[in-house]
Image (cartoon, rainbow over all chains, first blue to last red; front, side, top):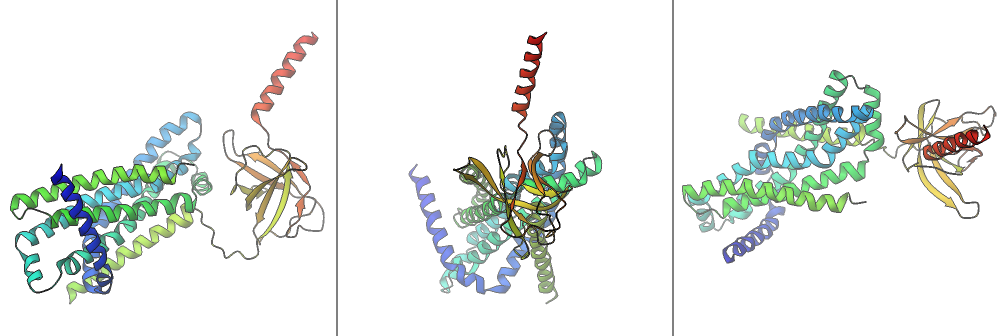
Length: 248
Length: 157
């Protein structure tokens, strides 16, 4: 119990120190660019393909449900709301945790094990500012963009199944969606969610790497833990954020 | 150097795709109207009962969307509901004797305001009120009336 509290305390201090390093990271353009390329651009194909399939499944399932009530015209609305409010932010954060968060934890953990972080400290270079802050900023910037791509491609996937294969009217598909989806209530709240998820998942992954026991087993455990805790945090926070945002 | 340029191109593509997706969500999915339509104007209409009409519900004429409901209010003197409609600038030739009705799109669909054009040669200007209105059809009331009529018809026999 005490050990667990210690981890929470170290994690909080870690976050504060990383946040302090953010202004510097924003000016270190080349490093930031490289990290966005790693965590963001390289996750893009995974996000786009997953988004398309999730949208297509929503189209199929939603159609089967709605056609019973003769309301299959609302398919576009159902698909868009499900994606923009929930599935886009949540699923893209989970994929990001698996694809990029685990890599970050392993990388930082290995840096610690091979004493690269300690060597930097010896040279009076703060590894939190130099190594971790740019990765953190890159993750926080990338996740909302990934979530937006996921939702947008998902809507197109839903349209492909609903309009292209099942014969829902194209005009009704889009007009019901536009009438029912509000920019501020639905789209903007979804973006806020994905920003929060980006902060939390990147923080947990980097911290697990930084806090790893400096052995090969320790790095492997840190990688596993980064994915487990990130996923749990995403689901837990999603419940809290949803009840705050959509309770009217 | 070439490796750096490759990364730059990949990040550029990533950011561009992300922003394009955001734009699509805003405009195509969320129907965000940018505040560029300076010519739009507001008119009001009084209804006895607006049923389930909501703010942002469409206002249409001959089935074409020409604006939306921007506010719903209540007149404590007459007990009527006042709907404020914002009509896009392109549709500034709505005759003053037009009538506004609240319809439902489909049996379970959303409610919207339909404007049937009148014959007057003068057109609505900002702040005008549409005089002729028809309230929302409330399904429960119709069913109740139908059952009542049936019952009283049965008594007469």
